[in-house]
Image (cartoon, rainbow, N blue to C red; front, side):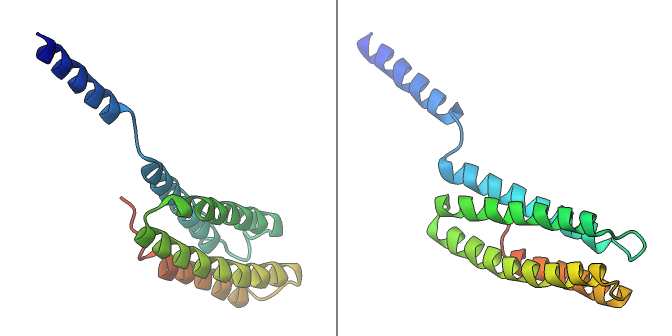
Length: 140
């Protein structure tokens, strides 16, 4: 009887632990993937921008949202496994540099009435930079 009770308690403990949720690494991975998806959304919005629909405020809002997502990734990457952490750090740093370069080009181009081709090229570079940096970072 004592063995049966012990087995039941052990089984219940395992069930509760299994239902208890994700590990810190799983939660971090989920947040990294969510931020990655948000970056893609912002990049897609920027890429669909044309000179006639572009506004300095709108572009700055997209870039701020991207920056927030980049910061989210940076804050979570330390909770990932070593291999995954290195992969995410590399992608995040590469894209962060791309965002800074493109952001300057976009803001300058819009503020000075820069040509549509300059703005389109900057947005294409941002999309290519996102794809290049985050392609190795798989999310399910």
